[in-house]
Amino acid sequence: MLVNHFLENSAQRLPEKVCLVFKDKRFTYAEIDKVSNQLAHTLIELGIKRGDRVAIYIENSPEVVISLFGILKAGAIFSVLNPLIKPRKLQYILNNCQASCLVTHTTKLSALLEIINTLPHLKSIILAGDKKEIELKNKTIIFWEDITSYPKTQPSSKCIDQDLATIIYTSGSTGEPKGVMFTHHGMVSAATSIIQYLENVESDIILDVLPLSFDYGLYQVLMAFKIGARVVLDRPFSYPYPVIELMLKEKITGFPGVPTIFAFLLSLENIQKYNFDFVRYVTNTAAALPPAFIPKLQKLFPNAKIYSMYGLTECKRVSYLPPKDLEKKPTSVGIPMPNTEVYIVNEKGEKVRPGEVGELVVRGSNLMRGYWGDPEATEKVLRPCPYPGEKVLYTGDLFKIDEDGYLYFVGRKDDMIKSRGERISPKEIENVLYELKGVKEAAVIGVPDQLLGQVIKAFIVTKDSIKLTEKDVIKHCTKHLEYFMVPKYVEFRSSLPKTSTGKIKKTELE
Amino acid sequence: MKNNIEQKIRDFIRDNFLMGEDDGNLSSNDSLLEKGIIDSVGILELVSFLEETFDIKVQDEELVPENLDSIAFIVNYIQHKKPELRG
Image (cartoon, rainbow over all chains, first blue to last red; front, side, top):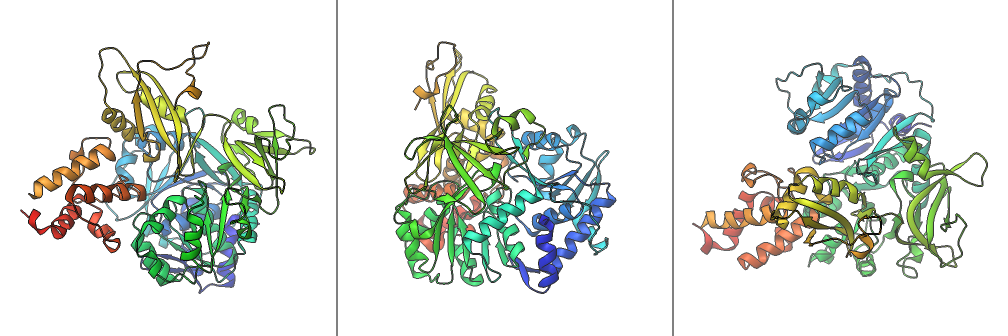
């Protein structure tokens, strides 16, 4: 099975069913299938071939959903980029995966134009938004509204499920983003397992107020389309009332969230006056659900099963806590999801006993294929195991397991920071800090935060005679980094603790 | 008065969220969400700031983009809550 079959099968079976709601627009399976066919023909005519990379750089919108299926139908590989990334990172990613086409929106043009002359692989741009006069040297531009002139029929594709379907960019320890590659098979496998434990059914109406560049947001669409359900999509959660209204109006049955979303809802004084009886399940991932939230969420959503889950981009999802165990083991992230197996190993690679801390290792057909163009980094995390010919994923996450086999997250093996569910490389932030005039030394660590998991703290030693303020540092970071990577705290020191080899000793910073 | 309110709000946004460039680039009508300046955590911080600085209580129902998603909206909202601050 291929990921685009999710849409094609449902369009065949339920053509008139509304599968996607976005603001005041409602799309049926047949409509989404038709437009994504047209987009696929557009791409094919632009010269896109099986295995080519096409990036999507647009805010959450139906265009993202249509694009990703259209790209797959053309036999190509899609990559949904965070619409908030800055030009420098956009340039890095487009060149790293050698994207030959970019689907974007006129509101993103100014960011793109800054780097347009440094993208040798990019041949064409599909532009959503208002049509306007624009000419770019050596790039073909097609406007979104013009794709409707292409054939509505399904293009023929030779893809098999071992072909790559997507590349998801995530922060890498070297400071540059890494492209996590998934085959169709890997994605179908992950979606199938998650649908199984959430007991998703065709009548589900799933709210999606998470970024589609985040695998958690992306899979809501994929899973719903696989089973013929409906997705209610909006921009990432910000103001609570429009979302509450949307939930009530659409009678959503599935509510995937993260702790910051739940915190905002639970902070509203009169939230309990709303009746959310129709919500069948609530899921949490990205950071642990604070135990204090559990009874409040249960009261707000009286008929909902609450799932606490854990995963990492490299295998999409690892585990879930069966809702019946939530009260008993509120700090556990549960048991491996169906068709996945895990074990914990110590420094010597030996399996540890319950209660002992070690690195979590994951087995399953949901694992990534590797990092795009980086076999060395791939080898470090996908390693041989006792099962002949198989590779397993070394997560870099430290875990322990209890006597009943339930998993508990302890921390990171390296110094990577986990904030808002994003893995953040201190090195990437430090690289940016070192570019600021006056910075002699910089070290970045994560400090605990109840809602975000961790937040970022930067330690800075300035060069003599140069005076820097916290404001200068944050301003500089905001210019070059996405907001979730900008330090929350900045501390100036006269020196930083060092190891005997002169490396900064981060374990002594707090 | 209006300029005074606007300046306080601009200072707060510049110091806490920042656009990375001078806030001169931020027009009074720009959407703070669309520009990637603020997110749900930022909204809560903005609300505490407004409550403290202007001595108001932001009601749950008032937590909507029409009141808070641009500098102009925030100025209008504050003036509506505190008519004595109208210029």
